[in-house]
Image (cartoon, rainbow, N blue to C red):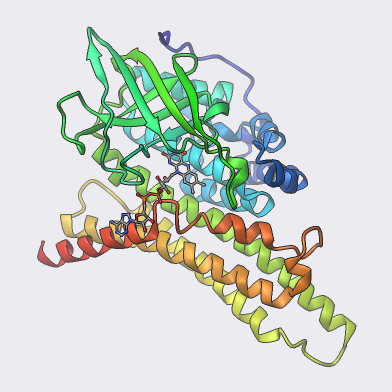
Length: 399
Ligand SMILES: Cc1cc2nc3c(=O)[nH]c(=O)nc-3n(C[C@H](O)[C@H](O)[C@H](O)COP(=O)(O)OP(=O)(O)OC[C@H]3O[C@@H](n4cnc5c(N)ncnc54)[C@H](O)[C@@H]3O)c2cc1C
């Protein structure tokens, strides 16, 4: 059983005290370390331990945790910026950091008033715990608002068994936030979110993670079994967590890291183009308009992200149903549009760099960027999200 969590007092790293500038300086160090190991992480489908050692050293796993619980109280804007910088160095490291912060955001927004979850926030900051997520389920796939498994509650304790097709870095996580039906007779959409702590869960590998890209996320399938105290179940319905925090924060942080990957690819293309121009002074290289186009695509992604961050900041409880539908549709649009545009930008970069981009091991190599980004439209399939958006738009009109 998980003991009531004792908050462990560790010295707070300097970056945590130094505000946004300190956090971004630490993120740049982690990104440089991530970039050094990115090709090996990709080739071996290995967890990016080196980058996470730097992130932990500077307290960045607890960056968003409020200062009252020992964190830096960073805003979503700052966390998005960190995801982007990290992903430019290593997409897998950026994605793992983003997924961890999505779970932290859910705890901050929806665990308030629950002593168990507040103490957990203290541990995330103090011990730099890494949080993973188990929402997907065998036979249900990426339908976030449905669960097949249930928490079976008895005498203040629960038991959960979930067949999860993908738990990114599950084998490296200190805790997993899982969705499940509220009880054995509950409908598939009557869900709760429960926080499972090591060593109270076991993971039995069901499938390996030998994929086209995002190989360092180590997103194996697992049979997840856990027991714990009922106080580990978040005190609000999962629907509220999904709508208010998990979905918009996921879409914002994913869009940010995808912008980071595309931005790095376009930066390589720009450097290639500038090299061509230097070699033949006085004339524009043939790829000139493609460079201008690729840079404009990254600017579009940045603009779309800024808008979403501004609207998420303005989200408050008093929004009308129609406004909430419209905001949900906007966040979905962020995900579907940035995931597609990022791939387009890297393809444009590939056309600019030509063989230097197609080959591995050149300063202009783009294969890893393209492979990593192909996870973007699939990660909660864009077709599924577009169907949801269409329903929201219909409901918005009639509400
Ligand atoms: C890098 C990466 C990391 C991940 N990490 C995690 C993790 O840590 N935890 C976790 O729980 N999950 C994780 N996932 C899984 C993810 O959240 C989704 O569950 C997964 O992308 C859905 O996969 P799917 O395509 O098999 O299933 P589905 O989304 O169910 O889609 C299956 C197919 O059905 C079609 N389809 C389904 N629904 C519709 C619809 N309504 N309209 C039209 N077409 C539809 C789609 O075209 C798709 O090809 C990760 C995925 C990736 C790529």
